[in-house]
Image 1: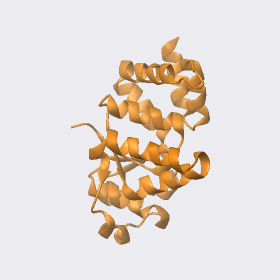
Image 2 (image 1 turned 90 degrees about the vertical axis):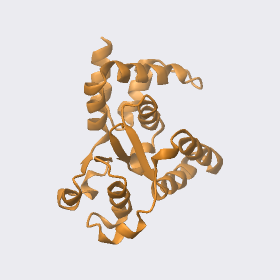
Image 3 (image 1 turned 90 degrees about the horizontal axis):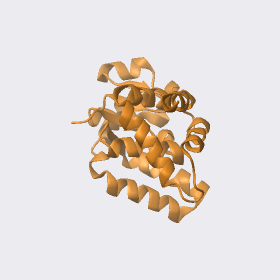
Length: 182
């Protein structure tokens, strides 16, 4: 079974970063995990930005593409979590799913003392993607190229897509891919 990684809402909010995480999961480099809380937050936050129907469509497409990603029956664990209160649902779901990492831009909300009892690590999306590149270099580069080729409105080159990733919060990964393409 693939490496289980719980994706926080902030990780899958931006379109470019989300596309890359889902493409890598589809290729089998890791197993994505999320909860109803995460998908609800995602849909709500996306609705504010792109409208209710496109937000719902995106979340439903994620559910359909990865039906085994949804973690359930974690709610009773939430009160026992000791990380930032607004993200206790994330840690509870990650614990329930036996995730090895929580991928999040909000590392400060997941202190080592809260994670240590569960042998879970919080990792920044940039670091997670660099790990994917290290473990699966050809697959990761091809995934980036495949996503860029798939953009039609507007059309996008691989370098354009890397700029979107950089602006989306994963600049070290974008730079590493540029180096791999050289």
